[in-house]
Image (cartoon, rainbow over all chains, first blue to last red; front, side):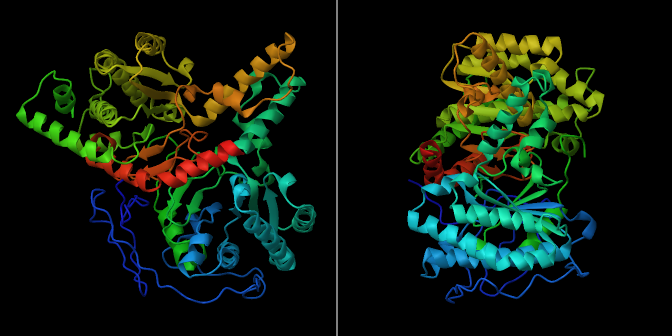
Length: 310
Length: 282
C-alpha cells in the first residue's frame, strides 16, 4: 500500500498566499509549485504545557468596542457567517502525550478566542460543529466527558455571553443529550435570545442529512394537511424548516475545517451550496488569531460567481 | 487530448502515443496496489479561462462552441483513465441550473456545443462499454437536447463496465426537492391505496428518488480551476467525500493530477471507510 509522508497542497487561494514565518515552522512556498510537487511537512513548535480544567481564560468577552482589523483584511469583504469544523483535539493531545480530555479542553479555549475575535471584527454568525451525530459511537467515557464539558462551558460562560451581547442557539438532535444539558441549553437560549452582537450556533448531535430529512418531513406534513401543494415545495420552504432557521443568515459564507482533513463530514449539507471552503493544516487547539486571519484573507481573495459570469 | 483518446481506442496514433499509454498503465498498476475509489466526481471548472488563454472562438452560432471542445476531450480522457484504473462510476458537472443566469448567447453556445458532441460521445461510450446517465432537471433543456440525452441513455443502458453520469441542468438542491416531491407523491399514492401504513417520509425513500440514485456516493470530488467550493453539486452525496481542489484548468487536467488525487484519497481511506460504517450503524 502506497502511503505519502508529505502533504499534497490543495489550492485554497487564487493569488499567492502571504507567507508569515513562524518559529519552528517550515513554510511552503505554494505559488511556484504545481500540483505535481507535494509540499514539505510543517514542523510544529510543540508546547508541552499541561491542560487545565479552568475554562475561563481571559475574563469576560469585551463589551462593544471599535477594534481595528489586521492590515490584510478589509471590513467590507468580511463574511457575515463563518462555520467551523473543530477537528483535531484528540490528535493534539496525543502529540503532547496528554489524555484526549485535555485536547477537548484546549479546544474550548481556542473556541473562546475565536468567539472574541468574531465579536470584535463584526462577524454576525458563527456556527461550530461541536459534536456530530456519528460521534455517539465514540467510547462512552469520552462522550460522557464531552457532555460534562459542554455543561461546564455553558454554565461558566452564560453570564459572559449575556454581557457580551452573544446569542446562543443549539442545533441537532437534543433528545439524545443528558436531561440536565437539555434544560441548561433551553435556559441559555432563552436568556440570550435578545442579544444581537454575535449569534453563536453550536451544532451538537447534529447531522446535515437528518437536518434535510426533518425539513423535508415537515414540508411533507404540510403538503399532506393541504396547507401547501406539492408543486409549491421549493427551496425557500425547505430553508424555513431547516434547523438553521434560527438565524437570518443560515448559509455560511466561509467554512473552516482544521487538522488537514478535506471533507465536510455531514455538516450543514444543504447550507453549504455556495460556501467557500478553507482547509487549515493546524489542529483545532492551535487554530488561533493568525490562522483565522489567514482563512479570512483567503476568503476575501475569492471570486464568488454563483454560477454566473466573472 | 483527442489524440490520446483515439490512440488508446486504437482509432489512430503513433509510437509516442503507444509509449505514453504503456507508461501510464504501469503507473496505474502501481496505484492499484492501494485502494482505488469506486466513484470519482468532477467539477469541470475553468473552460472559459482556458478559452481566453487560447483565444478560442466565442461564437456559438457558426459551428463555434470551440471553447468547450477541449473540455469535452478532457472529460473523455478522464473517463478513459478512470476505466483503466478500475473506477466504476464517473460523474461530471457539465451545466448547473445557475448557469442559465449567464448571457443567453453563451448558454446557447454551450447547448450547441453539447448537442454537437452527442454523436462523438455515442461512438466513444459504446467503444468503452460505458453506460451513460443524465442527472438533472432535463425539462429545462431544449427538446432536441433532451431527446438526444434520452436516446443515448437508452442505447447504453445494457453496458455495465462503467457508468458515466453527466449532470446537466442540475443543482443539488433541485435534486433534493425533486426527490422530496416524488417521495410525497409516492406516499400519497401508497396511503391512498392502503399499501403504506407508515406515515413518515424515510431517508432511504428520498435517496431512491434522487437523480444520482444510479451511483453510490462519490469517494472523491475533484474540482479544477482553483476554487474551493461545491457550487451546489452533490451536497447530499458528498458528506464523507474526499474533496480535492486543483489549480489546473479543466481542459488542462492530466494523468498526474488524477494520480495525486487518488494518492491523497488512499492516505485518508481508513478514516473514510470508518465514517461510512458509523453512519450505517447509526
